[in-house]
Length: 217
Image (cartoon, rainbow, N blue to C red; front, side):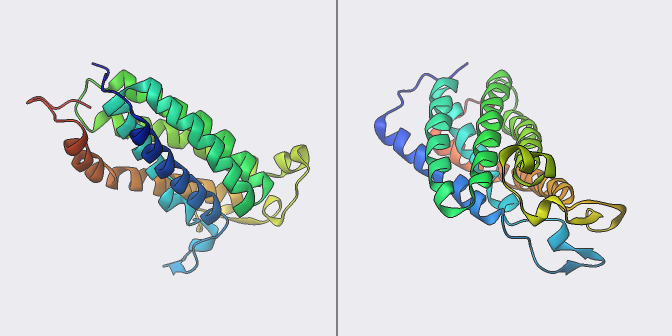
């Protein structure tokens, strides 16, 4: 059953602040490839640091949704979106801000919808499924807008990432535009981090919403 607890100004401020911190950090860190190698894999062709922080945005959305319901969660997404884009313009490039804002809004609203449909199932299914679908959309939108050559022409911004190439996943031929390899690598890490974040989700859930004997999402 959808939560009906009162959503106070204090709860709202905490949720929005947490969301803004996560998204702004991710927007900034996505500009920096992970340096180093893993066997034959050049990590700089595979990952950016933003992949490790962004999944926490789904954690904030899902906890808000679980305690207060979908409408407060959407409100947190909307206000977090405005704050994150505004701050991202200062910390990154305009193109990154456009890409991040578009991907964030669509992915987080999808997350809210999927979570709400699955909230009656076992505690882990709703947050994992919503994060999975949200991450797919977020990755597709963000990397295609932020780094693809076609969007560079459309938005009037150009950078070297539009033409640089790299082996897919840092290993496999043929080579693809580097942003595609980044997208595949980042998505893989996002899913691993989403799985890891199920543990803090369950712990925080115990503080926020006492679960009945049969645990729900």
